[in-house]
Image 1 (cartoon, rainbow, N blue to C red):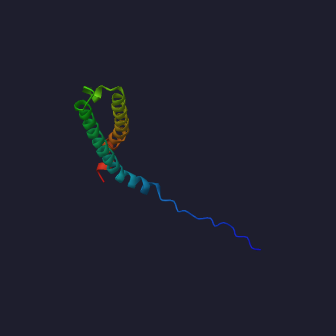
Image 2: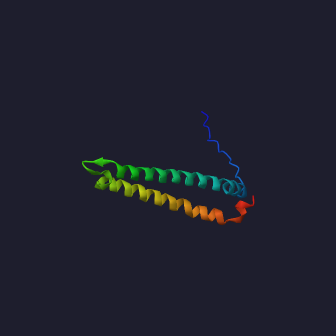
Image 3: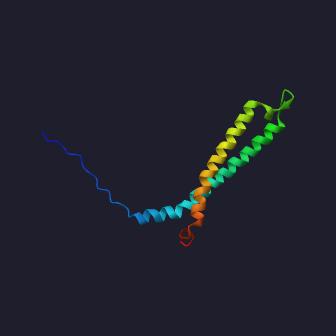
Length: 102
């Protein structure tokens, strides 16, 4: 009976400068898309706050309800955390002169 040995695949490594170059080129685009989504999240947050202040339930604005205030706080905290995660890399990319000279 013949046993087959598992075939080992050889992976050719991509030179590190090629990977770094593509990341250098794609980085600003990725950050731009994240910033665009953050802008949309901020717009949705603003609309939510307007709606909570204009909608009345049992004679008072919906925004005075404790559960709604918790939702507003959670949403605001999420947006701020994500904004911080996008702003740090953006400042790094923005300050790197080699990205802009390509």
